[in-house]
Length: 491
Image (cartoon, rainbow, N blue to C red; front, side, top):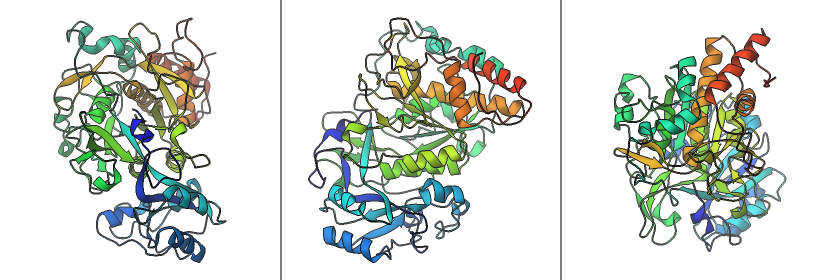
């Protein structure tokens, strides 16, 4: 996870800042201000509808026209109850979808040379607009996993050492997981034919849920010299990654079958692969994952709408790269998913200093830093008061696109925590109890193994202990006969 592409300067920006897709911005209107006739982007991508040519608000249309002429408007998110109603996915938004804001986010597509940052600033001055922001591009993979093992494959027990650090064996013997619990991996997609997943093929209805691909990118949206690879044309139900491998690595840590690495920490819980990061080839570099905020937000919301209990987010946007005064990326999607009962787990970042990445810094999200095999903080791990806890993130044996790799980064620490969160949901269901995202986060923090005494502040409560988290959950259930857990402590 990185923001290096976010450092590039683009001529259509209001000022030097995060790299954003030219000709595209996201606008959230106030409650009651979105005209009913604006189609959902998913229908437009599937060619079941055409974009609206007006917002039906004269003041809005006038401001847009003053900057760039014509506008094409769509609702970024479909209504959950109409998700499979082709051509009518903009009907029947729930109260939660309205209040969280996802029903009110419009995607504006304008002329490519429009000064998007300035347009967003102008739109935010209007009474009917709650927020407006450029459609920033997020990248992963420029720092990259280590694809060349530093040690022989079996000198850390074929990958068990980091799993043992978080007490994975004991956790899986305590709770084997539950096929009714779904963990979404919003990332670069996965290789569905990998040995860690091939025995769980989509048509078996076993460990993999049918996923989604929300990527919509074009060559003109990227910096000069960066070439798009594979399918980047629009939404479909094929989340296959053929170039990057980032999502495959994360998914195997959570839910791999154990064919060539230890089994995933989520046990029998099922994976929902969401491909929201496309593939791009920078000059003299291996392929990287790249996705617009709109595609990532659509992936997060669809994961929640498709029943995810936990969502792994091994991506992020550097707060310092965002225009001052602009809204924070993913705010509506995070609010909606949390309201639906999803626990969001995010990588803290790979900057090696104290800073803020989104979505990790949202208070509802479990932000995860990385430690090495000696329980020291990894030198690249981003710190800050928002970091909840850490997990192993250095030289982790996991799946690659073709075979296996040793991956390094907070991107690969977060899936350990996502897997543990899924076990907590599964265990609560075994005990006929309900567990909400706030309680899940509290349990993960309260059960963490203390950091080494020489560690600086800002790296969370300690290192993940999946087994201890399950024990604390049982203690909380035993102490409260109600079916709703309000919180837990280690007392």
